[in-house]
Image (cartoon, rainbow, N blue to C red; front, side):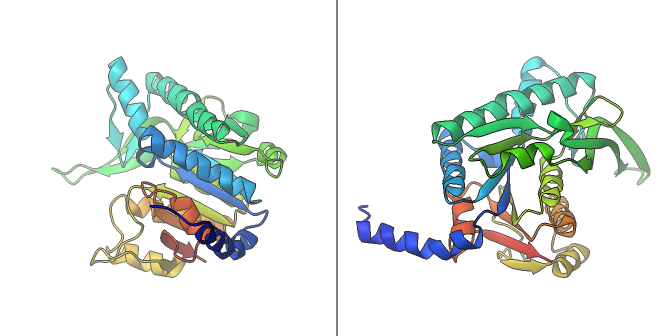
Length: 294
């Protein structure tokens, strides 16, 4: 299909008010393992991020990598177990997690952004003590006995403190930070942090205009599987309580609420497999997911 020059010009003028709305603002984008997809999709995402930076928006990319970690553990013959939706991370596993997240995946995304004309900087939570984490555990219920037990998740943590010093030096200088959700502990050591939780903590500390959580579903769905385009925090809590929001969507929405209470203006859950989802959400009237606001 041939796109006429006048059509391109019209699209650009329609994007102008959205560009002005986000001018010099910080937008944190959580780029999930499943949303990464194939290489052409990753390159398309990289071009979109560079476009945001070129329009005077300050993007911060936080990436996951669950599928890639699982694949590497399988190749190395290391068995991986889960509890409460989180990977139990022993001493051998945390080395692989850090290698894959802060190494291979992080530098691949940095490379794609740089090839697209951007200037990406790959970091993790340990750099400059950006994110300090505390150890967490999970309570699980045995399906046979219904007895609750506390599971030691090993080197799995949640953000306890975020220091934006390093990011403050990067943002606004034509640089795009790409962050791996690996954090240090206040007592030493390395923790694997859920990427959604990591992104929410960073976005809150930066008082970001938007936090975009790219996932593999269109957003929050109602009981008839129809996309809910906007929610308040109270609406979200009500939908969790009545079971409309369930399963893996609960921790995502709870991350949204946490980020909003920490200072983010709005959080969007959207389908990262949709081409140009970030641009559709930020630079068009249409939007591309579920917006949750205070």
